[in-house]
Amino acid sequence: MSGSHRAFAGLRHPGYRFYLCGSMLAMMADSIEHVISYWMLFQKFHSPALAGFAVISHWAPFLFFSIWSGALADRFDPRRIIQWAMAMFATASLAWGVLFLTGRLEIWHAVAILTIHGFAGVLWNPSAQLLIHDIVGRDRLQSAVRLMSMARTLGLLAGPAVGGAILLALGPSHGILLNVVFYLPLALWLWRAPYGPRFRKEPPRSRPIAGLADIVATVREMAGNHVLLSMTVVAGVSSFVVGNAYQAQMPEFAQDLGHGDAGLHYSMLLAANAAGALAGGVLLESFGLMQARPRTAFVLVALWCICIGGFAASTVYAFSVALMFAAGVCNLAFSSMSQTLVQLHAPDASRGRMIGIYNLSSNGMRAFSGVTVGVGGSLIGIHWSLALSAAVLLAVTLGLLAGYGRRRQPAATAE
Image (cartoon, helix red, strand yellow):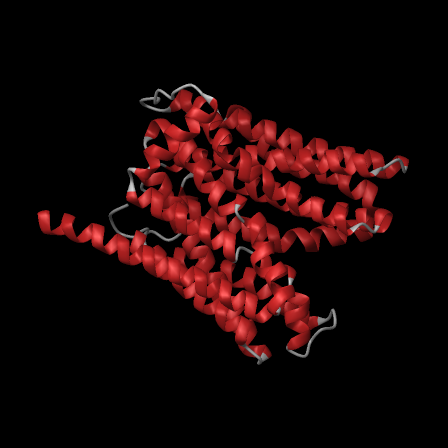
C-alpha cells in the first residue's frame, strides 16, 4: 500500500461502491430485525432466558463455525455464499412476520429463527471480507476494510432508529416483512458481479475441507506467521475480557453518573461509542492516517484499554462521554487495521480460513465477555470488573508488543 494517499480510496472503485451500499443496507436490516423481534419477544414471553439465548445464538456460531465458514469461502464462490446468507436472513424476517401476523409464535419458533439468524451471520462474515480483497486488491484494501467498518457502525446507528420508526409506522408484523426488502440489493447485485474465483488472474488451489484436521492444519499455518498470530490473539483477548459487554451495563453506569433515566443524557452515553467510531473512520480516511502496521495496532488497543479503564473510573458525565467517543475511534482504527493485516499476510490459498480464525477470535470470543464484565460485576461491582478487564487486556497487549519488537530486532540486524 505504497504511494501517495488518496482520501476514501476504496470508494474510487465503482464495484466496491455498490458492494458497500448493499452491505450497509443488509447490516441495517440485521439491526432492524433485532429491534422488532426482541421487542415482540419481550411483549409476548417476558423471558430473560429467551433474551439470553438471543445473545448466545448471535455469537456462538462465530465461536464454533467461523473456521469452516472461512474454508467454504476458500473452496467456493464467496458471492454465492453471501447470497445464501442473505436468503437465510430474509427467511428469518419472513418467518417472524408470518408468526406475528397469525399470532402463533411460540418459544420453539423463536429459538429456531434466532438460530437461523445466527448461522446466517457466521456464513456471511468471512466471505464478505474475502470478497473485499477480490474487488479492490491489495493497494486499496485498508481503505475498503475501514469503510466497511464505518458502514457497520452506520448500520448500528441507523438500524435502531429506522427499526423504531418502522415499528411505530407499520407495526411489528408488516414492519419486519418490509425488512426482507433491505437484503435484496446486495443479493441481486452479487448475481452478476464480476468478482470471485472465476475472475482472479491466478485462482488459488484451495485444499479440500477436512473437518478437525483442517482446523489443526490452519492453526499451525497461522502459528508460523507472527503478524497473523499476534493480530488474532490480541483480537481474541480483547473480545474475551472486554468485548462490548460494557454496553449492556450502560444503564448502571448512567445511573452512577446521575443520569439513570431513559432520556437525552442516557442516549448520548449509548451513542458516543458509535459516533466516535464513525468520526474516527472519516478522519482516518480523509487524511490517510495510521497505515496498517502491527506495532500501530498494538498501540491502538492499549489506548482503547486506557479509555475503557478511564470510563470505568470516571465520576464526571462529560468526561465519560468523551472517553466513550475516544474509545470508539480507537476501536474502529484497530479492528479495521487488524483485519487488513490478516488479509494482507494470509496465503492466497487459505485466506478465507485465516479470516475465519480471526472472526472466531474477534466475534466468537465476545460470548465470554458477559462473564468477565457482567458476572464479575455482580461480585465486585461493575466499575471494578470493567477496569480490571481493561487492565488485563492492557498487560497482554503490552506483552505482545514487546514480543513483536524482540522478533523484529534480529530481522532488522540481519538486514
